[in-house]
Image (tube, rainbow, N blue to C red; front, side, top):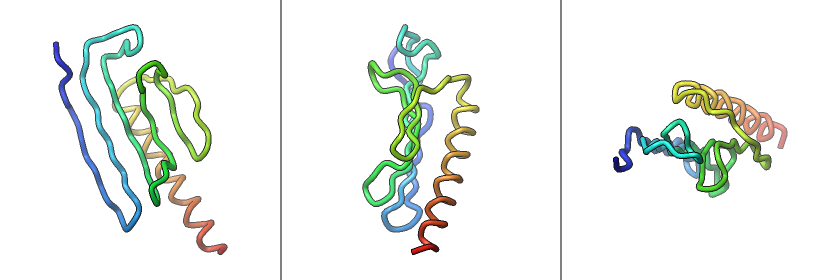
Length: 101
């Protein structure tokens, strides 16, 4: 079975803010036992602010600000839910910082 793109969306929300989501269905492996390769990312001014991915050899993990930590993949729906929850928080944090400047 070849990799099959099952979802891709790229949204440019305002100058310098990008949300991009890509999900592939792939054969299950020890590195990707759920059978998905994915990247969900929020980029602001060319810098990754948050996201989720499972890059080769790194397994499922989450980026939040400057932190990177393991992520327990449960389902695609849960992955999207977790990403959008982080996205709302990161945007709110950014708005609070901007209003204080």
